[in-house]
Length: 558
Image (cartoon, rainbow, N blue to C red):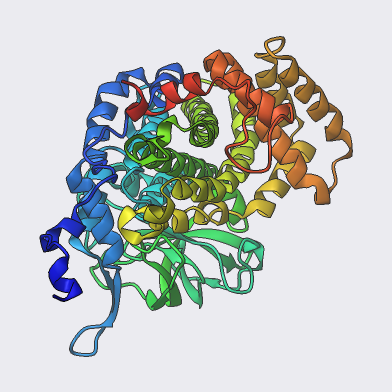
């Protein structure tokens, strides 16, 4: 008898039984977030709650989640010429991209709030982004740029009269055609060049006036221009009187293609569903937006909008990965218990939950300030001043926290999180973009210093906001005192330290006012009181982990 004959035979499938793996998360409700819903109501957009809940079910549904995966697996493809050799400069996207875009535009996540007279319309859009952000991030680029283009375009009323109704439309109408013959438009932007990056004043693209008033021709090469299949672009170029802003259509009013030669698409770390391009302008027709020489001043409102979206997208990414980590921990067992019941894993998840709640709460506060400022409800200008500085503070800090947060959430899944099928690697690759887009960390930190130096009302607005929580927590009061005393001797080298303190103090003040004691106490103890380590999962023993997790994780609420 051989050894093989002596061993009992088992069915071949027995070794392939799957045990101790979580079920699919999908379908789930991406709007099942008490922090989000409380902030929505608090900032004046409670009327949008039913629509947000409907969108949450769609975002967490199998169809939208599959679109997200496919849009990133099948990346956009550049076609510079057609089969006959004619220059076309088109980018082909997978159908799933168009489905994501269609929903986003229809749900008002592009330019729609500018045409909505209801108080809180911009808050509702931001909340929608926090929910729809549970799908995929790449298509958020053209919707964000379209949203941000409207206030800049208003600097040229004649152009705004023609294009704003189309930019605020809820109809997604892809394809290069005469803009005024379409049901809705998308806008992009072309600011940076290879020699300058964020230093846009070094742009070398030139704008030459034509005989027709307000019409110029451009010549130059942009380094990063995302979503090149948008219908119109806001572009910076050097006019005779200095750096100026222009509107560049892909298709001219007579139906001919404007010169917009796409040299290549960027091979990026993440954001791969979205095409980022290098276009060349050569005799490209452009219309002046705002006065010559005031290009930066013209686009400043655009910057405020896109920076808010960077904060929002980072907060959405945090929430998405926290939900994924919590779901895994609830269903995965190790060492005789569910991961969710293991004290150390609970500490990690609770620490992530604190960070996520602080990011979401700040995002919605910024959206509320933006809504009141752009609607004109802010008679004294306090919200405008707060928005001016707090958006830059939030952009710096929340987007900085995103990569570390996403890495920790991925680690909660262990090796399962390191494989592409989990979706976590895609989220991890996405996280650094939001700190880079619309000015890296240094650019935003310096912008905060600029605001404090040139616009003293911005500091007053921040401290007025912090004063609303005075006396509620001794650690917060001490942090406010340190922040105020530190403003007098801040150097450029210390800008990041200042902005970090400002962000944490602002987040803590919001949580003290609006979050349950379990959340506010743990945040103040760790982020302000120093009772914390250098990694997530180092909350003190005094932290109410049950209270924090019960609020944060839908899967933890029985």
